[in-house]
Length: 168
Image (cartoon, rainbow, N blue to C red; front, side, top):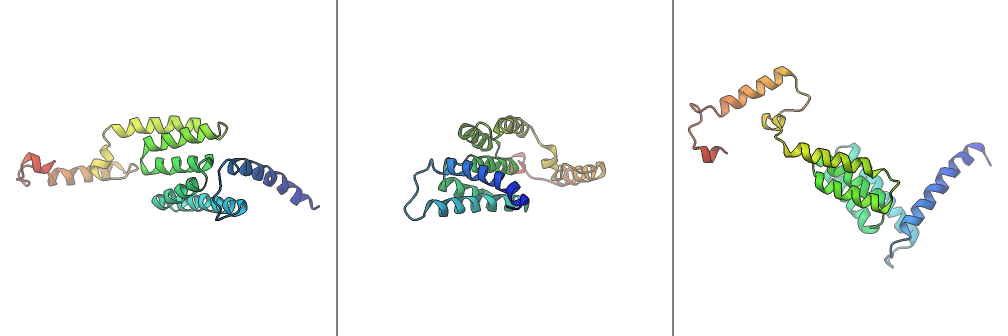
C-alpha cells in the first residue's frame, strides 16, 4: 500500500469508528439505510460549517437542526449549533447546546465554550453603547463622535417635539 494512503487510513478509520458509535445509538427510520443516514448527517453538518464561513448563520442553524433531527446523539451537531447561536447572540441557547454536547461527549471540548457563553450572556445584559450609536465595535474615535452628534441632533429637544413616551 502506498505510504500516503496508510497515513490517511488511520484518521479515517478512527473517525468512522467514532461516527459509527455516535450514529448507532439512534433508532433509524426505515426510509434510509445506516450508510445513507450517516452521509446525510455528515452533509448537513458540513453544510452548516460552509454557511457559517459565509456568515449565513440562520441557514447554518437550520442545517444543524436537521442534523440533530437525524441524530439527536450527535455531539458535534450540538457543538456547531452552539457556535452558531453564539454568533447570533443567543447565548443562553448556546450554553444549553454546549451542555448537551458535553453530556454526549465529555472530550469534545465544550467546557470552555460553556464558560464563554456564560461570559457573553453577562456582557449582553449590559448596555451596548456601540449598538445604541449604531456603529461597529471597531469604529474609530472620529466615527464614534460623528455617530454621537448624529443621534444628539436627532433627539435634541428643540428639533424633536415628541412626548417622552413616543421617543422611547
